[in-house]
Amino acid sequence: MPDEPCVHIAAITPSGTPKRRECEECVKIGARWVHLRTCQECGTTQCCDDSPNRHASKHARATSHPVIASAEPGERWLYCYPDEKFAEY
Image 1 (tube, rainbow, N blue to C red):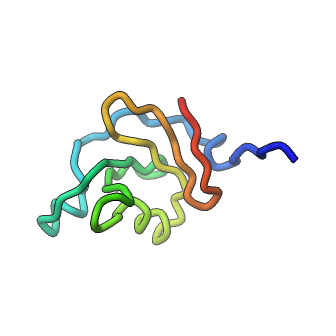
Image 2: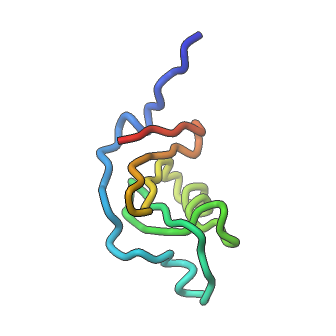
């Protein structure tokens, strides 16, 4: 069976660069992050799962916003949490 496309990613028009290059939640608590991800539903930018607080995936679970984009310079990919799928754009 061929790999099925992700309906969540198919519905997204990538939003491009984040408004700010910082994890909004880490800034609030004085924490550090490794990489940044931007929610494609609401535009918040938060830290990746390699970061101690994993704010992007916590946000996805709490809000049911399924797709994030890398907010790292030069990276152009999306990830869907529920389907565990990546797509470049």
